[in-house]
Image (tube, rainbow, N blue to C red; front, side, top):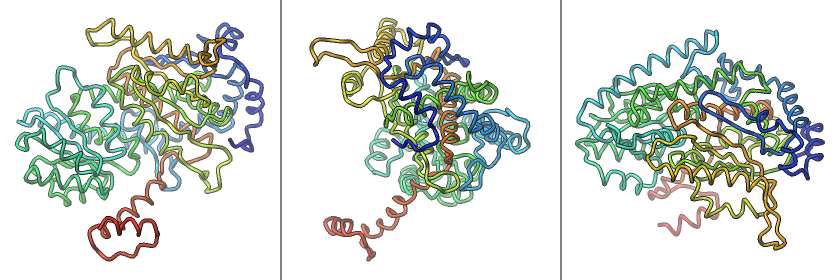
Length: 503
C-alpha cells in the first residue's frame, strides 16, 4: 500500500480505527444505521457496516471537496474534455437526459434522441417481421452491458425476439449458438466502435456467411461507412455511435440495440429514465448525501487507507449474475491506470481487483475464504426487496441469506475452538433495489459509473481511455499471419518456441 499519497490525515484516522470492531462502531454511533443510509428512487444503500466512523467520513468528504469532485461532475455533464489523453468529452449522460444547460451536452442529447428514434423503428420492424432470433456480435463494451441488461430484464415467459450473444473469437462459441437456430428466421447485429475489432470481424464473417448474405444483418459503429462496407450492410440498417461515448459507457446508446430487441423498446427507454434519475442526483446532491460520491469514498477508504487489494460484488438475484463481469470492465478498465492525467506516476494505489458471483451459490464456494481467510475483502451485497416470481418462500430464503452473510462477515462469532472462530470485521455495503425493474437497473448501473468517475478525480487519473488493452491486441494481429503459415519475424523466444510446436 502506498502511503506517500497526500492522505496523511486520513491515514491517521485509519490507524486510529485499525482495531475497531464493526459492532462497536454501530454502538458508538446510535444513529449510524440511518445516517449512513441513502435512498435514490428505487435504490436503497447502507454504508453502516463499513469500517469508518463519522470523523473519518468527514475527512473523506473534505478530501472530495479539496479535489473539487462537485466541479468535476459538472464538467463531465457539460461535455468538457475530461478524457484528456484522447481530447474528448465523455458524454454518456447525454444519452439518457438533458441535465445541464450547456450547448455541447444539449446537442449530444438531441443527436442521441434522434438515433434512438431510428433504433426504435428498427426494433418495431423486426418485431413485426418473421424473425424469431437475433445474434448480437461484439466484445467488451459492445457486449457486456447489453448482455447484462438483456439477461436481467428479459421476460420470464419469453420475449418476442430471442437475443443470443457471441463475443469470444473462439469459433466454438459461434458454432454452439448457431446450431440451435434457423438462418431463415434469424437476424444479426454487429457492434464495434471502430469496426476494426478482430473478434467482431471474424465472428461477423461467420454470421454473414451462415445467414447467406447481409439481408438481415444490422450494425452499430462510430464508423458507419466502414461497417456498411465491411459486410455490404444497407445504410438504413447501420446505427451510429460517437467518439464522445466510451465503449464501457455505451449501453445507453445504439449499442443497446440488442437490449431493446430483448426487452422491448419501451422498457429500454425506462432503463434510460432510471439512469437519468441517478444522474440528476449525482449532479445536484451535496457531497455528504451523494450516493455515487459516498460509494467512491468508501472504495477509496478500503483501497488506500485500509489496503484491501480486492473488491467483491455479490448479487442475491440470479438475474443479476452477470453484473460482476460487467463491473469488472467498467471499474478495472476505467481505473486500472498507473500515471496521472499529466503523465506523472500516481501517488497512491489505484483500482483493486473486482470480482464476485451470485448468491447463494457462492456461499458454497469461496465464502469460506471471506469469513475465515487471511485477506479481508470488502463487498457490495445487492438484492431485491420484491420479486416477481411466484415462489415467495424461495425469495424470503434468499433475502435471509443476504442479510445473514453481511451480518456474519461484519460481526463474526467467537469460539474456544479456533477452527470455528469467525473474526468478523469484514466490511460490506448493502444495496437493495425495490424490484428488478428497468428503472432500478438503470439507476444501479449509473451509480457505479459515477462512483468510478469520482474515484478517478480523487486519484487524478483518466477514467475514459484504455491504452493498456491495445498492446496484446496488436501483437495478436502480428502473430495471426505466423499461425497461418506466413514467414514472420518473431523476437520473443518463448513465442517462437510455441509457434514451432503449433505447426
